[in-house]
Length: 154
Image 1 (tube, rainbow, N blue to C red):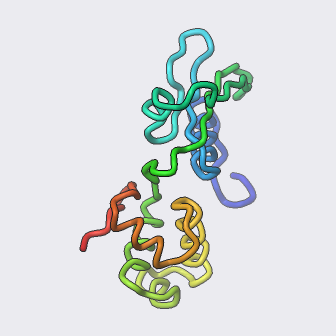
Image 2: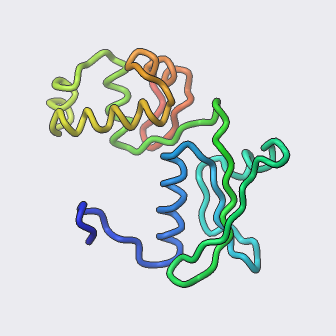
């Protein structure tokens, strides 16, 4: 276990998936490929489409070692209208934010701390690239957020 309580990735696929998740959080779309076969090892959501439609010269390519294995990493900034992938818990928090609940009420409803709700809300705002709860609610209603349980129903 890592110090933060998260399981450390142990094989190439786990590490590549963790790397793809990191790129998503940073606002990039990424495809991680086997260097010899070009098979996709991991990818951020909607990566293949973003790579096909990226402006010429915008894709950055690098090599990386994952558990001793060489991989090819292709990265492009996520388009501004790219769908956002939320975790299950983020989607739950997002629905309640969109309903107008404050952190304390959300914490009570979900059985988590207000601090945890605040951290989820900050992650949602970052993922959607907005600065307010109202703007996040609007983005969520537009259907831009996806994930387990995501999608705000009116």
